[in-house]
Image 1 (tube, one colour):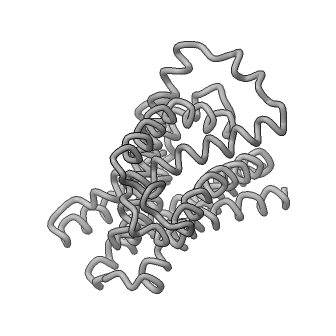
Image 2 (cartoon, one colour; image 1 turned 120 degrees about the horizontal axis):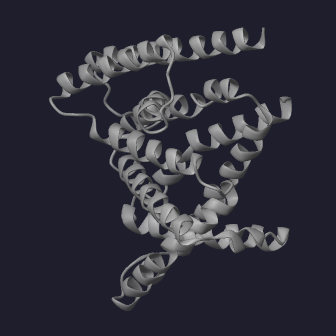
Length: 289
């Protein structure tokens, strides 16, 4: 279990530090970054599968599975695009909010789509978080759309992957395989037009983009290894490492504006997460007894 905690913690720390990486690519359009991330992730994942000689899962692919993963691939690419755009346009704090509310979105989705019955404490957490989102909407005069797009896209993505038949590595391989033709077509088109990093960029920019492959796949593999070894409750508490680091980077490293009036909304959401975590821990203890 201790090893599982280490794996999961490393995964969440890596995801929490992602803004530092995407900030290095601030001069490259977000769509181009996502295209490169897709292509180089596929190259890296195929390399891992080749080393492990792990291809048997491809024999189980059926039209229904391919359809489900085509949808999850679209959700994942939309999530990536929104996140990269947010980092490049000084909205790291808004992105962190999306991942703070994600666990509570998952509770609501479990109720609606999987007919799960959330406990009263979980409903209380969802209600308090909703109050926080409402407060932020009133303060800014608009919905916190970046946060909601990130939370909902990844929430639906997680829902699809929860009922899918493939593991983390195989799933990412299939998703990037399905997206790769579009990505390679875009790279070929930009290059033919004399545009894009591959034609106009320097060696440093290309090297940063090539890093997207391992930086995408390795945290996912660490997470999968950790999730197999530790209880879901422990995983649920560790997941706050990622948005906490993102929030800290946005405020203290990137010096994004953060008005005190918005703090009340964040405090409500943090309180909701506190209720959610304590309630989950107490429910796990009761079950243990």
